[in-house]
Image (cartoon, rainbow, N blue to C red):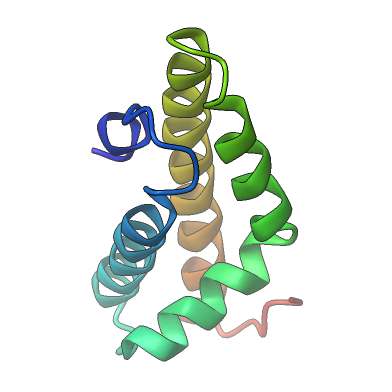
Length: 104
């Protein structure tokens, strides 16, 4: 879904939608791991895992200024980033389930 959204050829227009999808994904993964998160907490987990999220999102938006090619790059980046974010969230919540306090 994030790749499809990111392929829209409007620079920076898809950032709010991608962020909402990624925060929702982290919230749902948290539920699978027995963690109850509100959207604000899920956003905190996303920011703890993501590191330089805004810089990366900005780079994705700038790439869309290249017609056609930029949208493909943005879609690939969004899909890979969302996948990695989900993997990181699984590790984070798995540590919580195991009684460890994850280091942000």
